[in-house]
Amino acid sequence: MVSRNRVARTLAALTGLAAVLVSSAAQAQGLRLIRDTEIEETIREESAPVLRASGLNPDAVHFYLVADKDLNAFVAAGQNIFLHTGLIQETENPNQLLGVIAHEAGHISGGHSVRQGDMQRAGMVPFILTMGMGLAAAIAGQGQLGAALMSSSSYFGTLSVLSYSRVQEAAADQAAVSAMEQAGLSSRGLVEFFDAFRYQEIFSEQKKYQFFRSHPLSSERIEALRRRAEEQSHYGVVDTAAAIEEHEIIKAKLDAFMNPPQQTFIKYQDRDTRYVARYARAIAYYQSGEADKALAAIDKLIAEHPDNPYLWELKGQVLFENARTAEAAVAHARSVELKPEAPLLRVNYAQSLIALNDPQRMDEAIAQLKRALTEENDNSFAWTLMAQAYESKQMPGQARLATAEARFALGDLTGARAFAMRAREYLTKDTPDWRRATDIVLVSEPTPEDLRSLARETRGG
Image 1: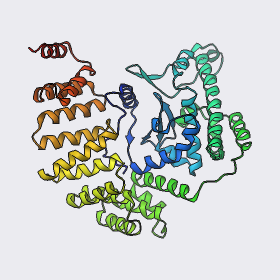
Image 2 (image 1 turned 90 degrees about the vertical axis):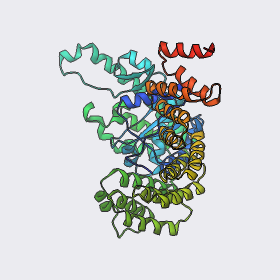
Image 3 (image 1 turned 120 degrees about the horizontal axis):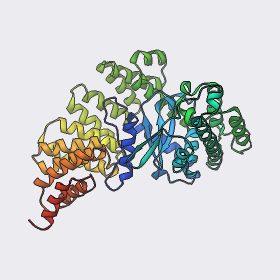
Image 4 (image 1 turned 180 degrees about the vertical axis):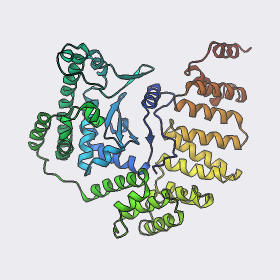
């Protein structure tokens, strides 16, 4: 579930250092990433045909949810699509969200994020650079009116960037229409989404949504997109009832977790008996500290949908955060049973097992975490839990190695190196864990003393 207390997933793995760089850059921009299996699964499944039609491998494209009410979406460091929760909330139907995703996929397939260096040389300076990787910052500032403005070199630099960016935006629009058509979907949603924010064209840069600062909007662009979209044979295709319901669920879930509970109760009133409304109210009860009401509402939903893993996950979360740990473990176990391929559900289950403080359950917790980390080796929270489990089993070498993995996943190379060096002191030389700790030291900017220490061990003295 979305949780304000949940440690966000970072993008790092030891064998994929570029992901660590994205994470560090995201932190530099103050991005707060959130996780939710249900929302992530819905977006991945719905977008897969569009991504394939864009010439991309859906398994290689990663979506990240940014907990921000501002309307924005962007591509960074390769095939990573960041979606602000505010943008998802502003889409009226799944077709609109897919249209935006198709547009961002167009930037990826067009290599636009790769060419951001060209844009910087064209005049756009505000980039956040971290260890050689960059995330685009919003184009900032405007020149003064009059002769002074017209003579400003920075002003012309900004103009060259905006012009260059509009070319990319038009190309991404056209790519999005082609991809949606090839996937058998209408591109009407992208037109509708842009048309709804046509007024942004006249706003100053400071007053625009972030999305329309980095994605310059104009009436000409919208009309060109509309003409192309209306020419497609699938323009009249509408969203399925199942897709609409899934879209409503992810929006309601974001509403309930990110807004004050009272706001949720107003939007989803008691007389609204739809599943999505009752789901939102159950979350709002939990958010307002009314655990008994939340559990009663969740149990009613489970009675109707006993094989829904996300309802069992929510029940486990409510129980766990209200110190009913044994019951939470049962609920989380059921969620894993229903959706064994979801790593976050295994992490939740492992957390509840560790909290039982039962030595006989600790090995099961470690097994669950290992399964989860097979899918998400960059999950820093899972590594932190692993460290706790090993510490409880009095295995200090493995505990420190797990902490090193957690720090590495967060981009904290100093902390990763320090804990990896400590782990090596406890681990048996030349074992897989010892070699792993050594690898972390070597890729985490080791000090000269660290390297001398490794060299001495290699020489056997």
